[in-house]
Length: 115
Image (cartoon, rainbow, N blue to C red):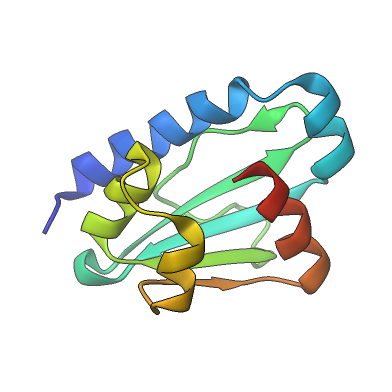
């Protein structure tokens, strides 16, 4: 089991990876959405926001406006790290039940193009 700090570092790396996506691809596939990433084995949730300019850093506290995330990811700590490092395929993880994404169909299709 990974630590909270290792998960936080993985999410920081994910933010950096999103910065590498071209402006054209971000404009075409990303709309503004609030995100949550629940790490089940650590019982911690991180909150972020994705938008055409990139992915904001994840925080430990929910947004002050109290609005729920439109895209909710549920994952184990080791799987989060493996996913961000490219050692775990998102499609296989979803089909195998290791990752759960709760989002609208439109959001899932947009995110699929970026992952």
